Length: 518
View 1 (cartoon, helix red, strand yellow):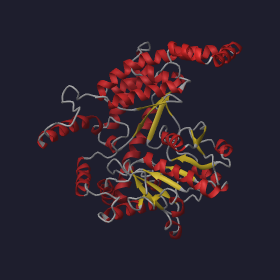
View 2: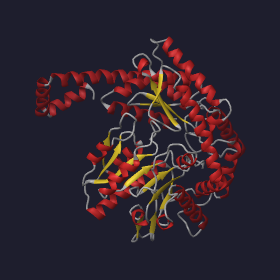
View 3: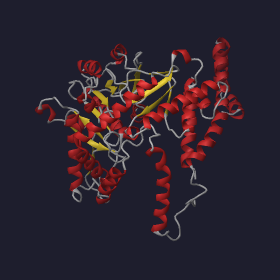
View 4: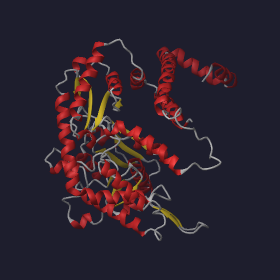
């Protein structure tokens, strides 16, 4: 707020400002803190402008090459010309992810697999699951996707209990999570009369739970993690109360790739008669196969009686085209609280299982086509390659004295400065040096670290060795140039430590504005 606005409010509300001034006089440390945050905000805004300018150039590389379409052209362009532009963009963008320089993002990426998905989508590109009378194929695809995912995450259960498992196909992990949280909010109000809903989740739970809390007015009680970056069991127990509508655990968490103690957490919830949601968006299509490969995978799925729902992304390690996920429930009674129906609308009876009305049936067709063509053996083979690559990378990172791996991850590996380099190595500058070599890694906060989510792209010949050598070189460069600030590293570091998180939020909103700017 600028000085002119403050003066206006001070004149309009003198009694309020008198109270504030009295508080600041009584607590001088608070006054110093507020002033320091103003300085920090000015610093981060100044650096933000510089970083966002650079980001805008990276985000809009085609601005000088292609015409900017500000309005619908008077006469349509020839299709060949349009397709040529699309192909040029695809070829340009393919280079980074296809070579194994990206964390996550593209999980399969083989050319023949991509062509197969495109063919499946093209055959059903006009399909819309909203109109079941016109496209009954969509019902077949989605019902079978749900069944295949549910049985994958319930192996070992008796058939009678497995028969009740159900779910919905969604547009992605965030929608799966949002739907589950909305479902539990509504269920708690109907069945228990809860008017002030709360959910319990570790601080490492995906940001989609924060989004659900904001969208659906559910209080999110965040619990700390222990030294292994797993949810603290005692803190979970203490956080559950009469308003709790769901408890949440990750399998694994996005930041550190660590699986929460879901067996203990879900049992706590079950004893309190509270639902439990396992977020397996990231690991749902690897963990069942890792278990078969004898990797140490703790219980996380429907075999645990307290687990009432699981979110699992088919478009990640399920290798379907982007835009599909599955939310699974233990029974249809729970799922009914997700559904939307209107019986007295002048437009007729209307119902929708998920947030969207019309949906791209082609994505469901491509998802179904992926599951039935990859098969269990294909997923097992993929898990073998990815986990083997992860074993190599973890082993080699552990040999770098200046780095340490956080927790005990399987395939999402977070690393931070080791104890001997904690005060001398800026991990965000290491990440920046890796970006100069073409990598796109994930910078994380609390603690400051970087992670790489390994995919089939990283299992190609020579990729894992190149990553380790480039990482060693990046660490050595940062150590040899301790006073160099870098470009994005300073703002990353400041954002990580800034007490007033709204400043960072403002920065992110500016970034999103830049995305939509012509």
